[in-house]
Structure formats: structure tokens, C-alpha cells
Image (cartoon, rainbow, N blue to C red; front, side, top):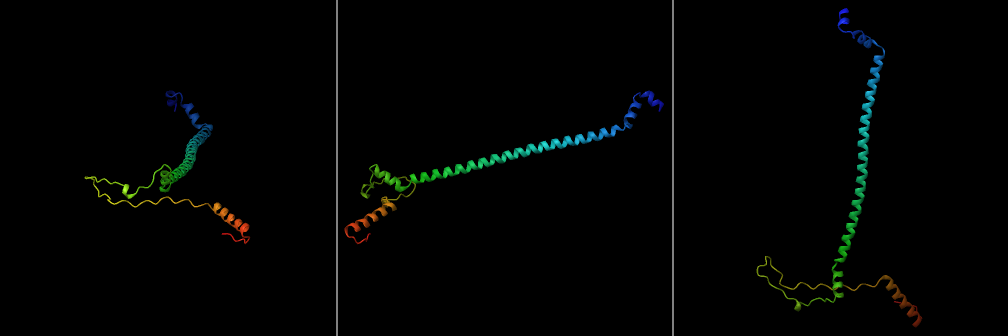
Length: 161
């Protein structure tokens, strides 16, 4: 033992440090501190991931709402386009521009020699002219009321149409 003290002058200090009572307390505090630090880091990662997931969920909800609104607007535009392209509307517009349906005698067909398909050689059936709009219900009620009043005034019988 004497030899180790002469060769290693710090040996008594190391032995005193190993036997000191506060050494075990310091180790316990260090272990608890490291554990708390690890838990705090893992908790921070968890909070970061959870907040990003919540933000992504909110963004997804907003995009779904925007998608629904755009689909509805698209459907409305398609309905408006279908209304504008309706045959009745196009026929009425053509009549207002001065066009009239063609007679079969006015139609000339050209035969194309190298046309790949058999072409229809007879005239297509004539399209029906657009029907005149029916009077509105209010107009019908007004007409009926006028007939009843006219019957009352002229005949006094009270019988209307």
C-alpha cells in the first residue's frame, strides 16, 4: 500500500472520493436528471408530431370544403351549359335570327367517293319546331276570373268557364 501511494500520489484522493457519501446522491440526481431530459426530448418530439398532424388535418378539412364548393360550382356551370345548348333554345335563337327549317327539296347531299363509311342517303327526319310556351298558372287564373266576371255582368248567372 505504501508503494501505491508513492507511485500514485492521487490514490488517497480517489479512495476518499469513492467512499464519500455524497457520491451516491450525486449519481442518483444525475440519473434522474438524464431521465427527465430524455422524457422532455421525447415529449417535445411527440408534441411537434401531434401539432403537425393537427395542422395537416385542418388543412385537409379546408381543402375538402374547397373541393366540395368547386364541384358544386362545376355542376352548376354544366347545368347552365346544358340549358344553353338545349335544342329548343337553339331552335328559338335560330328563329329570332331569321333562320327557318329547310324543306327536303332545299337540301343537297354530296357523295364523297372515298369516304370510309356508308353515308345516309335519305333526308333525316324533320326536327319538331319548338312548342309555344304554355301560359303561366297566374295567367290561367286571371283568364278564368275574367270569364266569371264577364258572365256575371252579362248574364247574371254566375257560371264561368
